[in-house]
Amino acid sequence: MQARHGAAAHRDRLALARPLDQAAALRRAHPHPPTPHRTPPPRPGHPRAPQHCTVGYGYYPASDQRIPTLRLRGRWLEQLGFTIGSKLHIRLRDGELVVSVAPTD
Image 1 (cartoon, rainbow, N blue to C red):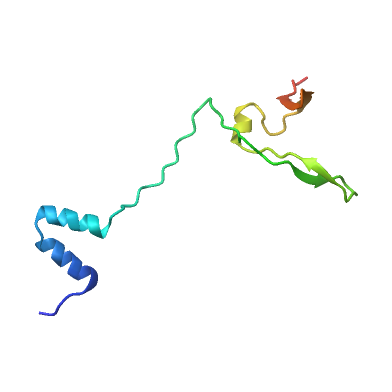
Image 2: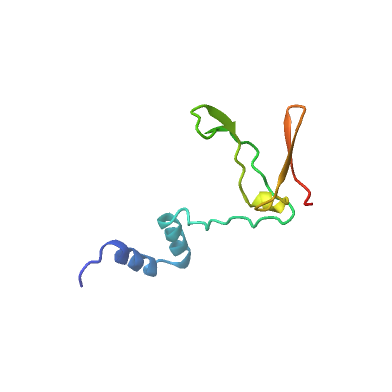
């Protein structure tokens, strides 16, 4: 009989082992079984906006001068009523921007 090597030999040793030894051998062979990556489902009614963002820059047409730019994107905007095509009302209040959906006429 020819000697087996590699995975086949490992299976043969496991088959001959007692049940508890077999479990221990499997734990040694695979010490950290892969865990499936699970993304928690979104909680309805609790949109999560980014906590921080960075002011970027853009340009006015026909100008090489940079201007501060904010870009917000995500399904959370839609959950808050900021649907595609919505008109916005922007107010300045104590160093804050207050953005709301403008009422439709």
